[in-house]
Length: 151
Image (cartoon, rainbow, N blue to C red):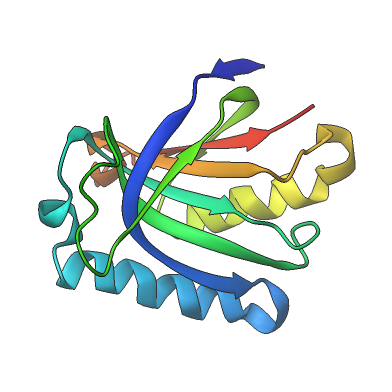
């Protein structure tokens, strides 16, 4: 169990669902937009260059609708560029998982394992997130941290 302090994100968002593989289509488009429009260069007050992929505003559990935000951690939400969103997330207790291997398959596989353990994890369904560090792009041994909010 890890305690995470509150944090702020600026980025782009979409509302989606895991039903009928809709999320894989929607999130693929969101990631494409993030890179093709060079969203990271438009974000002011960056704390670091790690990319956060946030899952929040859950309708119910992983089977319902939710909001996904791809962006960067910032120290202020005073300036949110047009077309982007800014959100602050409360801290709390998190379970950390590491997705290792070929991306994005390793992340998808890890989420499937998390869904299998859903009840045992005692998930809060407030905000879950992935952190893509520089080593996430390491071709030989990529790694992405996934944080799940728990009770």
